[in-house]
Image (cartoon, rainbow, N blue to C red; front, side, top):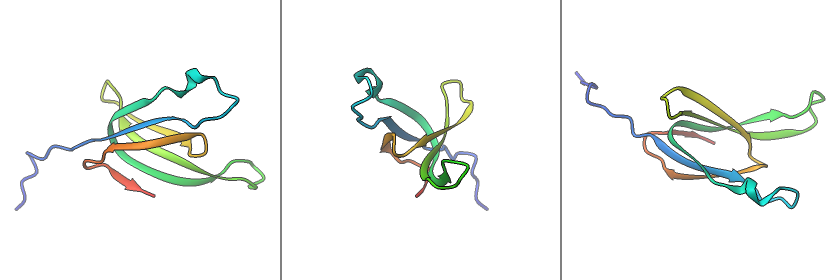
Length: 93
């Protein structure tokens, strides 16, 4: 029998920022770090009701500073992501 009482989840760490664009202010390019990531994945969704533009949406499930679960959803076209530590985080691409 496996005793999982001593198992500690090793959270992933992800950094993200806006992709460079000439129309953005340089202040928009600060790096944001998520320190307690549980899952990261990409979901393809239609951007318009006419279903004529398909986008790749990155979804990250993480815990915030108060240990509440959150889900970040961002267009892969607008942001860059860097996985700094994978740990036990699940990644679906």
